[in-house]
Image (cartoon, rainbow, N blue to C red):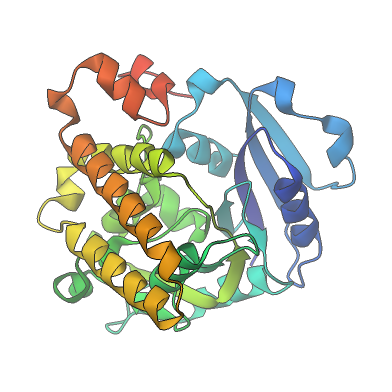
Length: 314
């Protein structure tokens, strides 16, 4: 199968260069790396001339949208498989593309075609203990295939997938209409829900691994979870009846137990504060229609999103 990689970028840094270098070193070759870069002034063409299969398209910040930019990149591809990545996710080894493509070889329990395969995210060396456990919680060591029949058992986790690193069958992806063309967040989960409801399967492949983690401040957590709440409020067809609060509470309890087991008692207050800010942001996002417009723009990570309401299409 031919493979193209789609990467939205904004002010790409050293991690982006390492990402490209690791893609170049993959044992399963990447055909094209298609970058949709936000703001041309932040792009240094000379720096990336060593990657001959790299192609770049430039957009403005006002044009950026999580779904639309990825649709734009995928529309430029003719490969069998397209892999969506973020510009700060670095392949952990030379087998990432191999593991992703091999993940399509199975089927769901009733013969469902696997339409997407998402990778395991490993914590970086600078990552705190609580974030390390979060990565383990969301990306365990065991692979699994999910279908719509898992909704009652897994709840919101049924739809969980991440475009930090996720491979798609391009033809089937386009047949389903691709990502929603305008969303502040969660384009990956919204597509996964659509695919599962259409009778496809989604695979989590633990053998496909990228290094990707963050040490967010409490305010950064609030802003990110505000956008998460907004995306869920805007898409009741996906999230109504499958609330994510239960998973959040479970994560906090298990992270606290993990920190205690490792005698990391000094990290417990930070966990409590961060979790509180996450929850406040999430609840405010869910209720964003009742907030003043000025408050919404201060709470979001992307004020431009609200300035292009009803527009912003690429």
